[in-house]
Length: 476
Ligand code: BG6
Image (cartoon, rainbow, N blue to C red):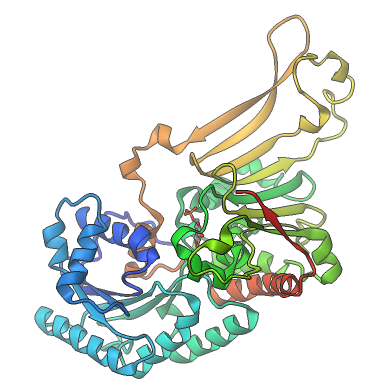
């Protein structure tokens, strides 16, 4: 990872080509991020964005679509002058030739071979076709070794199962060099998530206690009040475990359990993450029954795009143990669900009670009867809160002022919003785009990480598909 400031602009003529340019991801996350980068003058002076999608629109209509989907419109005219559109079918090579003409015209206008970033904001079943066509049409061929790089950026999930991920991986390796491939997991660009490395390795007080001897359990959850809403078709191809488990939750687990990298480079960090991901268990049917729960919220089946008899999970909870010398015996709980009571995304570490414990049993009788202080609660916890209020919380115990030794649970907390203005915090997609322009792969997942994650996820999904674990229907 470079330590250069994000203010530093990447001032080389660049074209960002977005596949799925009218889709949900573009509308909600990508477009606002690109426009924000434009407003803050982070984009190169010579910059174009070309939307590519199946929707049959003229360039003018696409600009109107862009305008409609941006709430803050400061500087919109200048931005729209950089927006172009190419309608076409992902499976049709001729559409790529048309796109090629547009790219060529921009190069001619700027009188240079521009950098080209191809962003696949489409469902995973299109990846293979798009990659092949990009390659066949020659669009991803760089102009030369030193000018006009080309890169491909691919959204999660990478593949739909282990076999498809491996196949896709082989294909990518054949068509592109690893340094051209950027596999997105936007969770890695969240402040609290990228802060995990700093928090763990820049604060020596935690170094010695970050293992099975001191940590009792690790819980990672991503609970959302929202349902699947307009994403029925996409979501029903995946289900919750592929949508957020294989990627976001496992990436957080990797960052929280990996050993210290030898240096602060993308390669070292990714290698350390791979080590723990490789130690994920492979569940057999018995383990699957014992350690997993899956559910679907009532009403899911009536969402447009969802199959009538769909058995896709919108909730799951999995208990696992890493087969890693530092983590043997420590339960890890992964949980995620849509239409939950509240929004809550966090990583919670519970520490063991160190024996002998002066304030556990002898003082139990002295504990204030009205307080709910129990031995079980006499455990320190450290929580990395990702949502709703990003921050870090450390629980501890303290003596209540008075004659008796009454013990209370208190918290040391740090919340981003208390220290930084919201406008200063970049969105995940802002950061990922800048890093991809810059060529920094730290916040992108490596092929080995992805394959190791699928090795764990695949047997679970296969078992669920055989109904080894019944699908429970829950009320939103
Ligand atoms: C996406 C999933 O990757 O992550 C969504 O496809 C999920 O289903 C989202 O809602 C959660 O991300 P965030 O940034 O909103 O916490």
